[in-house]
Image (cartoon, rainbow, N blue to C red; front, side, top):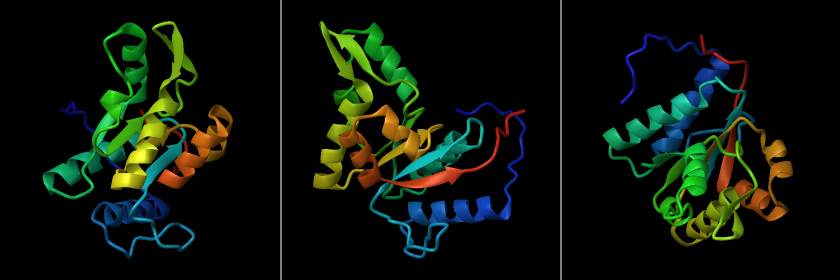
Length: 184
């Protein structure tokens, strides 16, 4: 449930066009286009990126509800990578890979935490382990993975192994959220 905090969405023309194409993406409308005019790939997930507070998480929460309420084929579950990392560190019973490879998903705060987490005396890179499994599921079953990050795709390249960076490019279409924080 969302708190009932008053706010007003304000979008410029470029943001309106981006959002309209995201709606088309989620309803599988082939007329969706990227800012460069190329067709929006409907069989790939999304990589939403931009500065903190530019509306990436909020818009994906709206689309999560939109897809569920309208019983759309692109329904997904929302997951916080910060929570996944915290649970992985704190609970030996929590399996971050097994618990996050099912269903289409949106992973918020992707890239905020990177590197190995010690589990049973060995390090596991949670981001890379989850993405590798989800990549295989995308190829086999068409499973979608959406990533929400404050990192640009190019900054992501320096955070992860070349293999994982390549997987992200293959799995997702970049969607830029321009500007500065809109939080008040």
